Image (cartoon, rainbow, N blue to C red):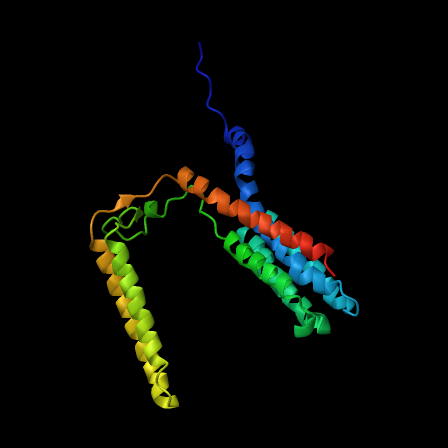
Length: 249
């Protein structure tokens, strides 16, 4: 009996392709969904108003095309994908706003729609952050050796009052700086107050970390399950905002 030959690299890539695509789909949705949401509320809606030049509408269309193409190119060609999905998308959206004219004036912009759009832009920005796959930075031959870092863990109950006291002290320093009325001394007072507040916060954090034992964080699955209710509420809020923006005047 002859031993079976090991599968070729093409066979392994073909078998791993569905799993890879399944892993990439949530990453694409994490960027594409909030990006489209922000584009609909803050770019398409002003560009669709009467009197907006055709050039502004053209840049609005180019921006969403750059977003979609960049998201799907990010895995095969990371530099091209990120350039299209970030710089081209944001740049064309900015040109749309610059050319839209009175459509984005202060008196013509709905505050609720703008706030929902800002929330979409924030989620879109965070969506571009992702893990580096299976590569482990510590395995690089160029890494500098050192003491291992402590695992992520929750602070002990004894450290919470220390952190609270440090925050209160930092706020007191900042508040005292506002009591200086003269312009020149006030500038120095705010700089000194900021430096003192940072020192107090750093000292409080070090003391809190050194108090008591550290409780290990729960598993990743447990943390993701705990995030499900607020994420669902956020999705419902965004959906209601999109429906309101679509059917409002």
